[in-house]
Structures are given as C-alpha cells and as structure tokens.
Image (cartoon, helix red, strand yellow):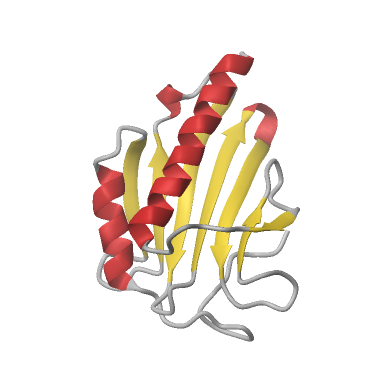
Length: 149
C-alpha cells in the first residue's frame, strides 16, 4: 500500500490547508459517530486531523476506529479510515486526491487493506461534500458490520 500524500518530495500536493482542516474539525466534532478530534501537531499549524470514532457504535469485534485527514491548499486531500480489530488486525480504506504517476489524481484505496486502487468520481470536491461522502460510507460500513454479526 502506498503512503498517504505528503507536502514534500516528488508529486508534492502543496501546503496544508489549515482553514479546511479546522472547518472539517468543527463538523466532525458535532457528529454522533465521533468521539474525539485532535490536530497534529496542534491547531495553530495542523498537518493532520486525527478523528477517533466512537467504538461503542461498532460491534465488539472492532476495538477502535479512526480517520486521519490531510487537506492541502491545492484541493488535494487524503482521508484514511482504519478499523482496529481483534488480534491486531486492521480493515482500512482511503479516499485520495493528489498528483501521482500510477493512478488518476482522484482515487480510492479499497478495503480491506487499502492496497487495491480504483478511480474515484465525486460530484463535488468541496470539503464538506467530500466529508459527507466519507461519513455516509462509514455509516454504511457500521450497518454492514452489525448485520454480519
């Protein structure tokens, strides 16, 4: 699996978009699925928005779930969803928009390992629309987990 895009090196996505990270944090902080949000390293110069999801909303087989969000002034982003499972197992996927040589700029790293990549089509790249798409997918994932129990 390729690492999430960064703001340095070849194919750089540009500087972090602090305003968009703060906007997303405000919306996520009021979402019932979210237990906690935190900026890394801090809210003054955030590079990453860490979002801990409420493990109580998941079946017992999921011990923790989180989102790692990076957003750049170029409109590029990476939203990485990870479920920690019993036995140190992970289920993960990622929504990405960044320049690269091996996939389309907008793509999705498919679960369960985020290793397989497919092109992604979104009707809007506005941060709140992307946020809505991701949270809807997570809600559907949680429903699926419960129905599989």
